Length: 491
Image 1: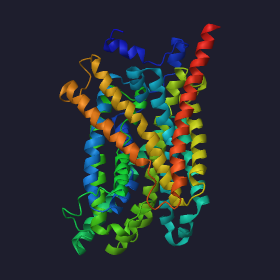
Image 2 (image 1 turned 90 degrees about the vertical axis):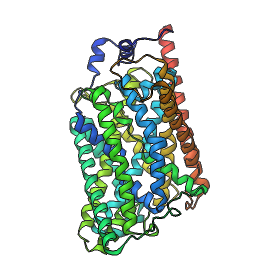
Image 3 (image 1 turned 135 degrees about the vertical axis):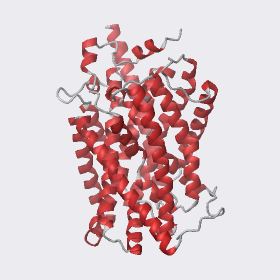
Image 4 (image 1 turned 45 degrees about the horizontal axis):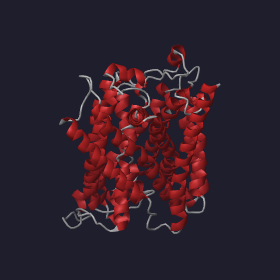
């Protein structure tokens, strides 16, 4: 098949399916409401999760080196690939469009399906973390809820409901949750950094930073931890799903992506170092680790009053992140609905607010199911670990498509205004290959249950079985849509 020019390529990925008129397509176009500031804050709130700072600090000084390795081997290839692909095809759908163009309808649908469904375990995981932090607002009165599954379930359902409602009303409303979440992230991050430096100045470093202590271990349990920090750098592709809701997307996305990427890396590394300056890694844990670090450090340096503020803002930042992902990934079933791979209702916008409300409500309902499923048969911490692992595997499958599409689409001509990877086609393919290999290793490591999981067989069954069910459901949905389309053409 002859390669189309750039103008033609934009036409082929516009949201006009074979069963849709131009008038219907125009009605299916969302409003452009996201400017550079909104997009930058979106990248910050989706790219940085304060929970990973605690996870990294709990592993000790070697996590600083692992942060650097994850950034070089995963985030940098991902950012460069997203930068070029979103510049080539700045339309609604992002990853879905790129995979479909490179490998056909099935690959496009499965990349979107696995990315969409990966957020079903993501929502309860990030909201569990927010719930754990809320308890520190009134630590003495609410501490007894720290292992109360009912509290975590109710909190997750309420906050997921609020985020869904705001995004249904519209991105011009929902974006304020994302923006506030991003801004809420900076204050506790600043508190951690400042108090860590104060503790270091007054008492010296609580952690020894030496060549030996900073050398990553290659034991199996430590390799599993590497995959978690790699997962922390995911998210810079999400804004591209909303390409038609971004003002001047071809120009805005690359600049916001580059600035956001530098911000993400600095925050993770500096935050981890400052926690370790204030506390030894043995005093930091995962689920409530950062706020615990704030509590202990605040007590040590004589600023206990900052704890309730930090706890509230850490929780708010994670609720904002959940809202941002909810908004972005709902655009995937929206575009798939337009293409008739999902029921046509997914491709309809709300008549008043012009948002993909069916996709948002469906995502809410399925996310609620995962809130209960993750908790079944395990502790609160066990549920959190399973949700994280299940989210990692489903979330990273689309990255295999993304990096493979980056390699495949190098054969297509690019218009002069496309932002290419420095070094041309050869470097672009090499960068994408590094990202593909890193993603493959991360998926393999994520199959291994967490070392302190008391019921490892059940945890493995949830991780592997849950991922398999999501993938098979996607393949079945695609096959059913193709059969329905074929039958309608015959009739």
